[in-house]
Image (cartoon, rainbow, N blue to C red; front, side):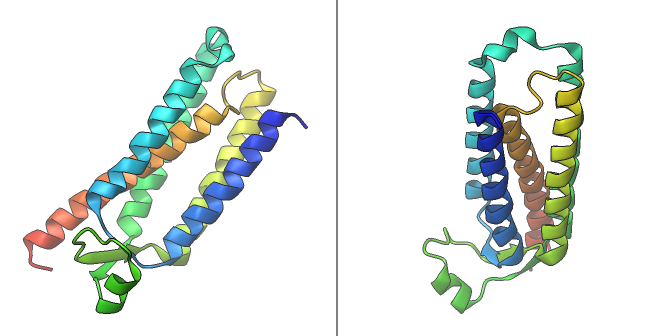
Length: 172
């Protein structure tokens, strides 16, 4: 096993655990904060990709794999945004949130959201293994994982923003 595989495995375990907990628990919805994480992850991923020594060896196959995985990532993020449940934030929820930023709603996707997240990770690993076996230079890179995670969170945040806009316009 090489170091890259160990780093990727660690990132996957941390991402699944962190995102899994976030899917199952009610959390205050703060749109400004929701955009921060994907922007930071995407920037780190892009900088890592640009500084990668493999960048000069990118093929059309690599680009195809990247585009395919981004489409899947955006679709899963959108689905998570659609399946999220919203409720007015409770006094207990406000007390548990250290800094709710004036949030009035909280959300979670529950076990179905967690299952979708795990399915996404399993699919990502399958694509990674298959693309690597076919000669992809960047499919298994840490940069790709960060870019795909950022794309997923951007799609989820965009759907959340649209849904919350509709909810607040009808007075919920």
